View (cartoon, rainbow, N blue to C red):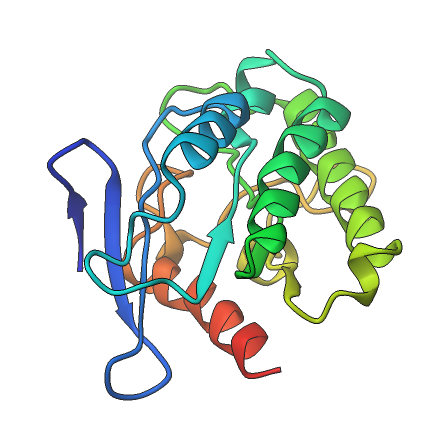
Length: 193
């Protein structure tokens, strides 16, 4: 199910992990990583409704990089503030890389943004692989960029050009139900690990 909630978050709920398990997105379209962190620090986990959340999932930074308002290093630092806070509060944290976003209607995703996304994803991978985070069993890092990227769209150097698979997005950046389910499958796998 996909749509916009009362406070304008993009909401999709994907059944996962059997009866009673679901993945809900409380992201707000257009939000930068500093706003995500501020909202997390002020409100905590809100997508679970009345039930307490066990897991929280952070995926942020695409708007920072597309608008060129923060460097990949700054975005990783922002996201680590939220990740580390959630770990400190006892949550199991899913932290996913930034997905491809080229081809979106606004034309904001250029080679520079694709390069910044790759830089962010590499820095995120390093943060996940470095102690003490690498030793924390409650941190589950998700790397879905390559799996959701269109392998037929390549740059002259042979690397992925940064387009989502057409079945996963109508506008080049926001996921369709099929895209949401594909990304959710990574979360389910991370939760089961």
